[in-house]
Length: 446
Image 1 (tube, rainbow, N blue to C red):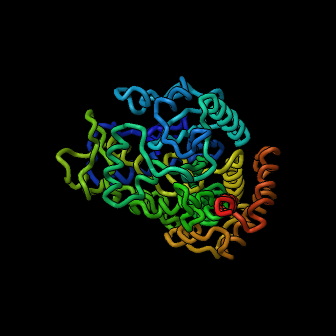
Image 2 (image 1 turned 60 degrees about the vertical axis):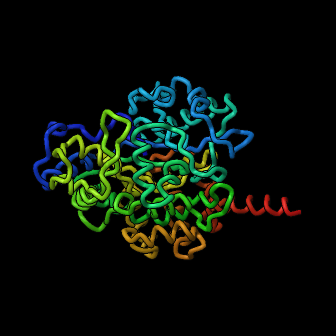
Image 3 (image 1 turned 45 degrees about the vertical axis):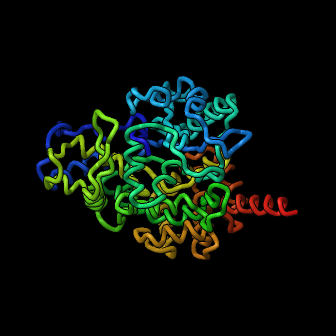
C-alpha cells in the first residue's frame, strides 16, 4: 500500500517520453500515459513477491507496539521515517540479505518486497531468506509475525506518522471505519508478474483476464482472516470484506472483459484524489474531486504527468497495473504457507493450456467484475459448493503443472501439504483459526 512498495528494480516511469512536470492537455493524453506506463509489453519472465505481516509482542499480542521498538528491531533495514519524521517519506533502509527492501505500513505491518527475479525459484528463495532474516531480527526484540490476514488481537491503530497516511486516514474516515481497518489491521501476500506480450500464448489481455477470473476462487481458497480484535466477524476473509467496503472507485476490480488498457485508464481517471503531496504535513485532497475533474480545471493549477503517476500509486484494485501486474487480493498466510499462493498463481499463468483449464474450473463461480463474486468468496469461503469445487480443481491443476512451471520441489511439497490439509477437505486456513477460537472459548467456560 505504501508509495514505495513496487517490485524493486522495475519502475512505472521507465521509457516515458513526456517530462513528468509537463501539464496534461487532455483526457486522451492522460489515458495514453496510463496505457504506456501501466502495461509494459514483453515476454513474461520476471517475478516479485511482497510479504506483508502483522507484528505482535510475543507475550502480549494485544499490545500496541511503540514505533521505536519496531525500528530498533529492524535496525538498518528500517525506513528512516520511522524514527526521523523529517526524513524523506519514500526513503528505504539497507536491503535485506537477498536484496529485498522493507517498508512499514500504517499499523506497523512489516512488508518486504523482493527484487524482480528472472526465475520463480530464485524469487521464492530470496523471499524465504529475507523473511527468515526479518523474523529473526524481530524475535531478538521479543516480537513475532502474525499468522492472519487481519489483526486477530488488536483494534486498528496507526503508529506510523507520514503525511500520506494522515491524509489517507482523513479521506477514508469520511466513508466509515474500513479505511482505518485497511491501513492498520490487514496483511497480504502478493505476486507481481510481467504483463505479457501483445498477442500469442502469453497475451497481456489473457493474463489480465485469468488473474481476475480466478480471483474469487483464490480469495476463498486462501481465506485467512475470520477474527478481528478478538471477535469472529462472520466472514472467512475479513480482509477482503474491508477492501470491498472501502471506496469502490478505488478498490473495485477493473472489468476484465474489456480492453485492459482502456478500462484501467478510465477507472484511474474517474477515481477520487486521495492525497496531494506537497512540502507541508497536510496532503489532503479536496473532497469529491476525481483526477478527471482536475483535468477539467477543478484545482488551482493544471495536473501534470507527475501528479498522474502519483495518483496511480493511490489505487488499490485486486490486480494493479504498474508496468507489471501486481496481484493484491490474497490474505497473508500462517508460517511458511505464504509460499503457496504465489506458486499457485505463477503456475496458472505458465501456459495457455493451463490458463484455459483454470478458466474452465472457475466459470461457475460468477463474473469477477461483479463485486458480489468477491463478497461471496470472502464471506462464505469454501462452504460455497461452487467455490469449493473450483478451488479443488484449481489446486489440482496447479499441483499437476507446478514443476514444469518452474516451481521448486520443496515448494510443491508445501503446496501438497496445504491442499491435503485444507483445500481437498473443503477447508480454508480461516477454519483453523475458528476451530482454535472455539476451543479456547470452551476452555474458558469450563
